[in-house]
Amino acid sequence: MTDPTGKMFVSYRRSQADIAEALITSLHEHGIRTWQDISDLRTEPTQPEIRNVLEVENPELAGGIVLVSEDVTKSDIILELELPRLHNRWKNEEEFFVVVALCPGIDYDDANEILSESPTLLDFSDWNMIKLGSTADTPASADDVATAVLTERVRLNHERLDEDHPLDVSLDTYAPPSHASRPAVTIDWSSYFADEAPTPDHWNQRLLPRLQRVIDLVEESAPGRSLRVRGQAHLPAAFALGRCLQTTRGIDATWLQYSAGQHSPWNLHTDHQDSGLESTLHVNDITGSDLAVLVCVTNEVGAAVGRSKSSLPDFGGVLELSLSDDIGSSLNTSEAAHAAHVFRQAVQSALNELSATSTIHLFMAAPVGLAFLFGQQSNTFPEIQTYLLETTDGARTYQPAAALGN
Image 1: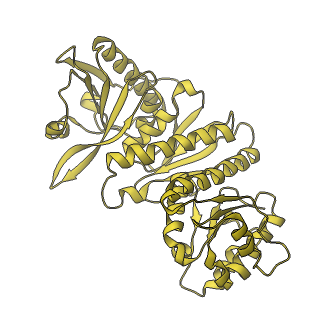
Image 2: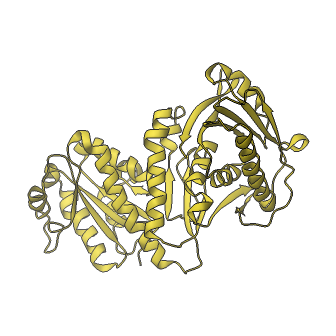
Image 3: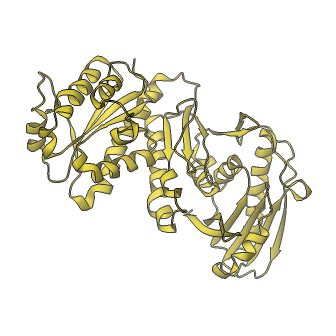
């Protein structure tokens, strides 16, 4: 039986490595794990390893993606091994699925001719196919392939789960996902943080639109399904995911907060227990358009914000949310729900007093699960500019990250 949380096998020619890489990047950003020769093959003979992973009912794979280029006709491994075995798995496993994508310059007739070269009675020549368009269009077209894969993947997982069982989602930015249990959707942004933090353009023009698309597709393909979210993510990313799942959207979402060797479910609907989070508003200019919100739960943020002043606007007000003498102490599930409630009430009160505010500037030192809950509580707020804490030459400063519209 196919495991619908498994990887997608990517079949392609090495001559098309750039196109394959664009496709794989999009798949990872859309929450789909992949099996690729250059990253998953072990140091042993190629064909036996590929043959093994493509064996019927091998749980490592959920499906396959065939990238068709003109020189596929010159690859015995693709024609005689990968394509027949992918087709055989599709034929014999109800939940195993295959998506066929055409490289730039390949039309449907070309693809039919190329795929019919596979020496089997049944092949992919009559398959529905997705064209990647011109080379310049490849990134956007790769998203079309990822959308098709994610839609089918979520549908299959949704149909398999019991009605009251949540769909598992992960968001990882520090390193590729390596969760003991395999979430159905594994959003992987780690490549953008490998050397340095993403630029604001990367955040706002690539990562955020894809994150919103993932949640939209999950909602469409698994209607009424609750979500259980986890991951090792930077705070702006977790906040952005929470904002995609605002309470007004009606999707029940829980963050699994990892602490002391175990995961605790953090959810806004949990009974509240006083967290000790207190708020203080400092008003500088009631006509100002920028409000700073400083969240001090695991550490103080004021000094790092102060060192970042040269790149920040003048703030009409500064709202501080702090555990005061208890900064750095751990929160339990009920305290986290209370802290998220305090966050919403305090920010809304500050916006009422500073009615000219058009942008909230959010600086956080908090558990990642709390950032997620804060994002869920941000409906009706104006644009929120998040910031990422960075250390340069020993100095900790905040740099712009995701800008989230209302």
